[in-house]
Length: 503
Image (tube, rainbow, N blue to C red; front, side, top):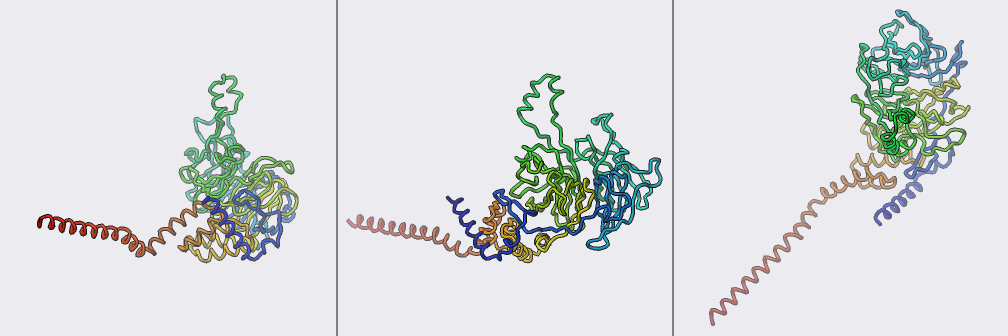
């Protein structure tokens, strides 16, 4: 009964907020950007991003057109494209909001016997300004200085657990502040391959948990050797891409996880690894960060979202790129979905085969390997307001954050994160009773419990005098009454004894 009453009161509160808020959210209909509510229902949303420009080979004035580009890296106002099919790296400079210019084409270097690339798939620049390149076809990771002079290379790790016949093919990598290299290599499913800055192999990091069905496990125990050889092994899933954030944590996306395991939360589509290789990704949202919740087969695309890349902004919002349906899924540091947009197609803002994603500030860049194009997205006014609310909260300006979330809610009354954001801002301002109402509306049990606990504590502190007085009345008055009765009883007994003695 209490739960029913709670939901009724929450619904009433939501109606009040919706009526009070301006109805601007309903003036714009869009099937492009959406979100999921507490019930898993799709809620359309004003766009958080708009397409600024789509860059093709012609727009970039390239004599040789892009061919199967697969890697993207941003450094300051520079963007590097791994033009894999043409065995080169293209350096672009963002000279203005809508303008990218080719400043250098890197297709060779100095100081090595093999001084050209073969199918480069990833690029990175360390804090010291050195270049690192996944030279996939040549089976190495190159380290060059900024003048393209050879410094060293990272090759196949020497490890007894690896097949001697395995060809080393590094596909993606990240570089930490000490120039340690973490890479993904085809056929290596033990986690990320870690190298020290001197090229020494130092082990595997962050292997994904093995998932399996209990019936398969029992059957393997009973099966013959011949049957075992035909069955799939229980092995960790390989990462498809990785990204290192500003704090040194590695975000990894996994594209081959089991559908049922993704659905029940026993497998991850995205992970956040600490230095020990442990997954510390927070999942406080209503739904696991796996992309789309419904896996229909419309348009020839079926199954769950297939994350092939991820980028992390300085406000801890991470954006995952879905290669299956061409969508971008963004989550905050608590695991709440911030936005979803995109799709498959030939129009601006849609993709044919998205391969990589990067960001500069809040602007997003998506590389399409089939269309051979680079799409630049910039935040809309609605998107900027959402980011302001998140960043103001992180900076400790909770009152301003609350006002920004109120502005968000006035534009989209169905945006769950706005209610939760207002509640969190009120919670930090010690306005616990008000915070409880917002958390109750969106069934945020964890934050509601925090607010209720603090509200109860605050209530006791504010009414401690009255509480003590009531306790005094409840405890002392009965004692006094009992004492008086006891005294009267003793007096009565004394008088009775006195009368008996006089006789």
